[in-house]
Length: 203
Image (cartoon, rainbow, N blue to C red; front, top):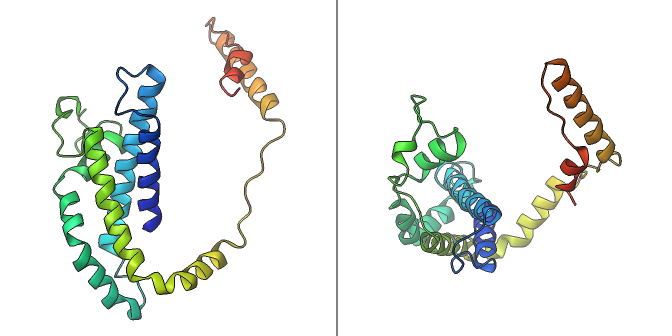
C-alpha cells in the first residue's frame, strides 16, 4: 500500500519536473506522456484504496490491528477528501481499464467530462498531497517496526532473478517484420514494412 503511495508521488513529480502545468499546448508525444501519467496515477489510487479498505486491517497480524484502526482515525480527514471524488473507480473501470465501455458494453464517449474524478493537474496536486498525508501517518505509526518490515521484505525477494535481455532482440524483430510482410503479400496486400524504421523507435 505504501508502495502505491510512493508511485503516485513519483508520477506526480515527473509531471511537475516536465512542467506540464506550465506548458501549453503540448505536442503529441507530450500529450501521450501526460495522459499516461494521469491515468496511471488514478489506477494506483484505486489500488491504494483496495489495500487500505479491504486488506490493511483484515490481513494484518492481530498485534497490529488496533494500531491500524488508530491510523485510519488519524488519517480520516485526508481519506475523506479523496472520497469526495466519488467516481474515481468508475472512471478507472470504464475509461482506463475496459476500453471506454460501461458495464452494458456501451461506449462512454457521451460521459467524457462528466465523471466526478480528478480532472486537472491542480486536482492531481491535491490528490498527491492527500496521499502523502495518509502515507506519513502510516509511516509515523510504524516507524519503530521499519527494520523488522524491511527484513521481511528482503526475505521475500531474495530468490528473485531479474529477467535477462535477449541478445538477439534486433534479429528477432527483423524476422518478425519479414514474416508480416510475407503474410501481407500472400493475402493480396501490398503492405511492406521497413524493419529499420520500426527498430528506429528503440534508438
